[in-house]
Amino acid sequence: MLLPHHHTTRVRILRTQPAGEMERADVVAVEEPLEIRLRQRDAGTRREHSIAVTMRTPGHDFELAAGFLYSEGIVRERADIERITYCEGTAPQEYNIVNVDLRPGMTFDEARLLRHFYITSSCGVCGKASLEALEVQGCTSLPAGEPLVDAGVIQSLPSALHDAQTDFQRTGGVHAAALFDHAGRLVCLREDVGRHNAVDKVVGERLLEGALPLSGHIMMVSGRTSFEILQKSLVAQVPIVISVGAPSSLAVDLARNFGMTLVGFTSDEGFNVYADSGRIVRG
Image (cartoon, rainbow, N blue to C red; front, side):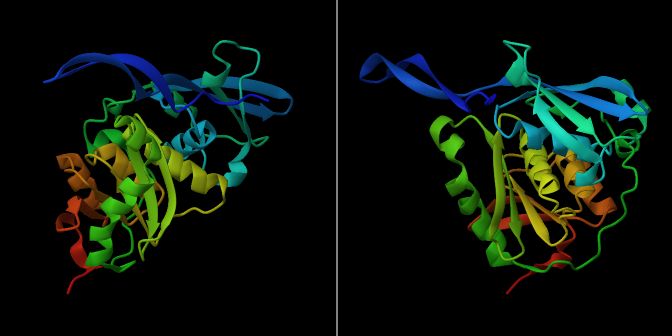
């Protein structure tokens, strides 16, 4: 049985400090490509599409593939995916290729595949310059005032996120996405060199568990909040997105257009609300 590569690896470094220089071991996050291949069976015909290559931290690769397909609208529910496997027999790349078999007879808009995604760990899917270019299909505004979250809960989330980031504590080199319920209880956390990958892993984990949509939940991300993170959260119907850093202008636009609560610069001392403060209970 194939096992994915490690999340981290050791390297030798030269440490420079006022007392002098010394060689020592250090731990860094692993970054490797993952190719996602989509396979269909219909009336005895089998087709295969290579639809994405992303630079990611190995681990939870099946969740990453499932979350990516969901956020792009290729799959809509757990039943659309028959199975997910590594591509055995393709050494040395066998851990870096994932096959997603769709349920027999399932169809989808193949025009979506023409973009042939290449995703970098730093910026996500590039070229989505506006709301119009993204074409968020089938998404409607989320119900107002649901759920209600206490401001104190929001201020507690950065420390809860940090405490659960085991790979970050070892390397300082990965992002995290975490799903919390409205009371601040951790549901799922994933880490990755790409913040968008971490979100896909969280959404994919919930998809494979049959636990979508994510209404009533909070998505918390490390670093800044990009348009793409808001888009992925919207597709999963997450009403509240919180980050420890700043949002982009397009992230703010998307949140305001679809009735999402967007919070940034979150700490135990306070936070900024960029969209829909109506879900936050203060005082």
